[in-house]
Length: 260
Ligand SMILES: Nc1ncnc2c1ncn2[C@@H]1O[C@H](COP(=O)(O)OP(=O)(O)OP(=O)(O)O)[C@@H](O)[C@H]1O
Ligand SMILES: [Mg+2]
Image (cartoon, rainbow, N blue to C red; front, side, top):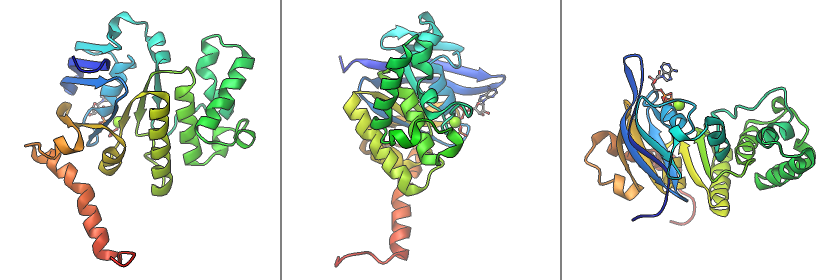
């Protein structure tokens, strides 16, 4: 048997009216793995992610989280076990940074003193200065800082699994790069299983161990970048070619640095 599974989808389908948003998808995510989900707008990425923590219920098929059928797990308990980073942060605008991060521990009945300690640990973990950020409202943060708070909040209840819906989407490329690298370090340090939706194939290739490609509700392909490059599917190959084509266009326009 391969390593233990964190999440397993077996022939999962979810329709909205006549539309099959997720269409007969089977996908195993191993414990400790970093998986990226890529695919065009409306291809079913968010729906697939939300099925895992029962923000959406499947019509058919089976989803297991750490070998338990999610149907048998209380949805609230499930969401405490699985951290979720919403697209564009999804912070509560009327709560301070500390209160945003402490939302789940508070629901779990953790004492105020213990929450305060945990908030400080998490701010350090995501590299935000405590004194400067703890008591601010989300509106007083930059986009990148908000995303860091979103990650801290997702980690607050010490989940082993983190799901992220385009966590670095709206950021400038440098911030995005730095946050991606920082998250990759956290993933390793905390022994997480991470699933990240991204539109950016370069980001997927650089950060993830494996990539799942969605199109029109179907899982078209899954594998390491090297495995995907041997795919027989034209769309998958086209996606994989994009980063290299961009590099070639950049190289043509930018003088290369150094003596090479
Ligand atoms: N609650 C809903 N009611 C009706 N249709 C929905 C609902 N949620 C999603 N859909 C439809 O299901 C399809 C898949 O949506 P989903 O949000 O999973 O796509 P996505 O791959 O995450 O797209 P994007 O990259 O734009 O975020 C889309 O056609 C969408 O309009
Ligand atoms: Mg989406």
